[in-house]
Image 1 (cartoon, rainbow, N blue to C red):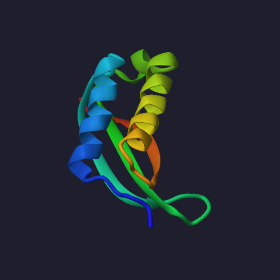
Image 2: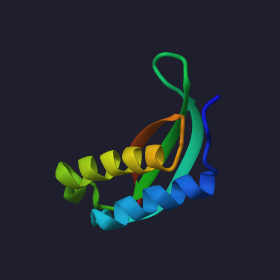
Image 3: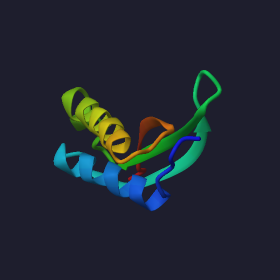
Image 4: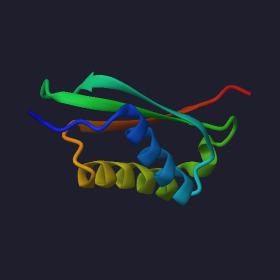
Length: 90
């Protein structure tokens, strides 16, 4: 059985990675998910500040996603992380 971090710890890790990559965000949420092979996954949603999605495209968003995945693995999270962004409404 794979190890699972608490939702609070996952949110903390994702928030740290987003801040370090200068991603303007208002919230991070998690939800259980299933990966494409039917395995356990964790969906991590980073809610961007209104109007900021264009500013993070490319390197900042890619670095944040790769950092979240790496840090979760390093912390012992066994579920596959699915990281996505949504933009807050103004």
